[in-house]
Length: 230
Image (tube, rainbow, N blue to C red; front, top):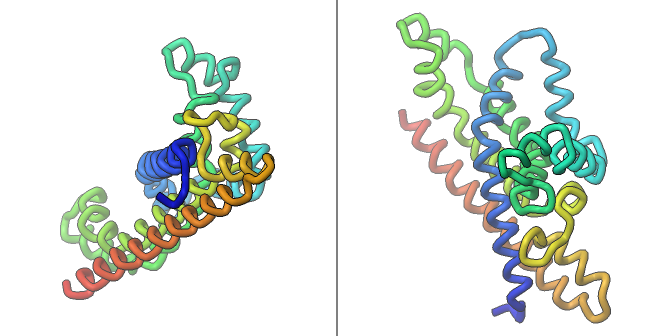
């Protein structure tokens, strides 16, 4: 199928697995951070906002190197995790961490903009009727921001699929273990006659990204219609 070999399909499936895990694990924290930045006033808010967006500003290789320093087996956090039998560096789970960190700013920004667009009077009205903050968020805020949540998740998924610099620095490019689509494309471009396979992987990347966008648009439109009917 598509003229791809087992190694290339492994890279494709690994990329999908990494992107899905990175998106799923980031989403709860992304919603919380986006809500905090959109609704709360607290000391260090601008610092938190800067830290959230820092991976977008720094070179991805720098992010990967910092991850290696922190989560490598000799790192401050990595050595502690290694004692528990958890190793992230040069493992596919490390690729999940790198992809999640690189995709997190896009997710948070999309969700934050969606939260800021919600009329706070709706939340205040529910609160005056005795609803708890958790109930207000679950029954009022969350349904209204679902399109933004979906958009942020899709952006994060697409970013995770295409993540290269931080991933290859933190987990290397090990076929069958840590080699994702971008690192496989890079590897094929380094060998003679590898351009053909690299081009096929590029086509697969485009198809995955387009499918994700179309699915997200369809889901967002359905949710918007349901919210409008209420």
